Length: 292
Image (tube, rainbow, N blue to C red; front, side, top):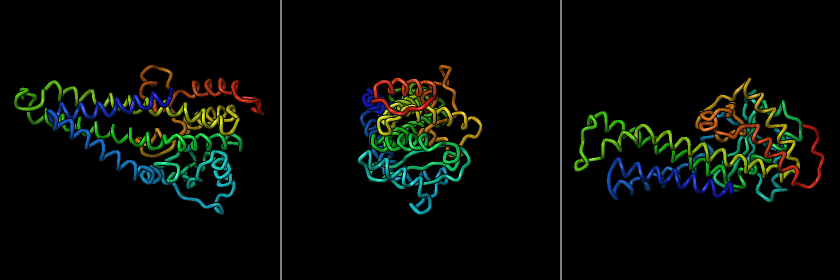
């Protein structure tokens, strides 16, 4: 179901990009420009999103000798999941957070902050790493990069639409150029719609990664405890970085309790994620889940 939702939302996002290009430029040419723009931005994100994300947070690569416990944990979970061991990075920040990036399991990286290494016990850190590896296995890192670049292209076209209204005064008729009403809707509504769709994709993939981590470790409750601890920490000390990459992080500080907060949040509410993990615990074989 999560995979179906992701495909549907990505299709809707791409359709929005093509439609805006059609309205802005007009006719088949406009639609083709939209398709070409989507292809170019997606190709760029496919190759460079990992480097950009790691640089945005100042992540530093580490070797097995430099961080033996962390590296051993990533290596062990990767072997258990049957995937290549991703590159490991540490972010020099006291904030507690983590993310994964990369276009596929063969070209992936996991980054954790110094803060998360300091506050999480071993079983909870293992659950967080498993969550990030699940993102890589599911290719969520590529999905999120594609969603972000398409949304960015939509915002760019919307900006062009606003320039068109500024220079034409919104007075063109349909025979001479784009419909003024279409320009207005493109400039105002399209970026909002693109953002909502992009964030909905991010929220959908978080539930899938939580479930993947629970199955990989056999300990859903450890991830539930980690999420609660990380949310409390992030409210006191949010990580500094480019907000465009916030969907990559395992938690953010947005409450998500009100409708608008939920609509524009990059993550599902921690409360909902914990509830889903505890439901999943009932379906997995008995294990030493500990107390929550």
